[in-house]
Image (tube, rainbow, N blue to C red):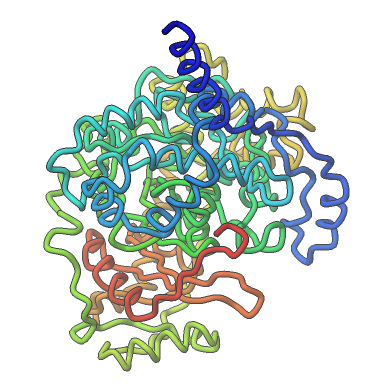
Length: 546
């Protein structure tokens, strides 16, 4: 009997050993040749000085998951791909409710997929900065609570955060060396709302350092902490867009269900466009900014970045809430997906910019909209002045960053303002600021008074509204732009924008259609965006990440 028991135990042990996958080791690679090739790129911003992070060891990032991933096989990963890749939230929730998928398996799938690509030196995208060490525990807890979950819920959905958004599970670095150990005591307000609605924080993604208001003419998607984020549609060929580069890249590559980006001027629309994903920059005051490393309290907002419009609306609902700590916050009663979206464009009226009709993809899209019944009005907006825009950002950040550092950062962080950060970086600039910190130095030098700043803000707001005046004058549902071409104008006007994949250049570089609407018209933009998405269905996965 003892012998039989021993054999059974031995057989079980042997079986378990056979099932255990070999550990994946992240190895630093020699990037000399690749960097030399990059110096021939036609864009100065793409002539990288480095690619790999000098601060992150991905073996450490993945250490909490080594045992769990050891029993998640390549075979299982391949079997789950049809259930997960490119699927929207309702489809994922349906698979969970039917038992074909679990929140734990979904989370394991993303962890495995991130490791699979990021450990390959020929495919790594440097989009991930940190992973929540508790994420699998949280996913298992969600599996115990999955009864009666709506298909239109963020419950159990693993999402990624741009690394300027506070979450207690990981430090919030803004990509900067000085904030490497910024372990905050509390979550950003929107993160608290996401958790209340059952979303799982998978981790943090890379960004253009300090949300791309740091160095002048430097690569988009570069940060000291995360290294150089790369575009999956053309690794080292196409720009990632910025500053929410990691958010766009991670969503495009199916590294999570969705990601949160932030925008001051184009930082959601740009990377969404460059990575063929859906990005919404809401009206200022719709989503809270508390607990987010700022540039400008005048223009900053977080927003959802997703693979499709339905997910974008569901994601928006999960972040919504009045925040008394954010002076701009408003009580918004909107449900961005209630009763679904109509796949109908016949009663819509949009403005088309004549200056963009020379773009063949834009013109083709406009023609498709016309044939679908959309009333199209060709526009030639007035010339406007953008004087003072950099001053606005300078002075807002000069005043807003110290507030974040005082109220929302880890108490041991020694820097208290922009001037302190500049001094910190000068001690080892090759490591901390290899492309310089010209914009931060400009902030320090700017002596604009608060009274002068208010005049600049009012003038810019007035000019932005003047450019977009046809929205009201001609009762348009939206004005159509390309990528982030007019994001700055929409920003200073305080108008929302929605970017939806529109097509691909002959080179394979993604191009998107951007809908600009009046304040608080997010639901309308999402409805139009959904109908356009269903009409065209152009989004495709990057071919090396399928």
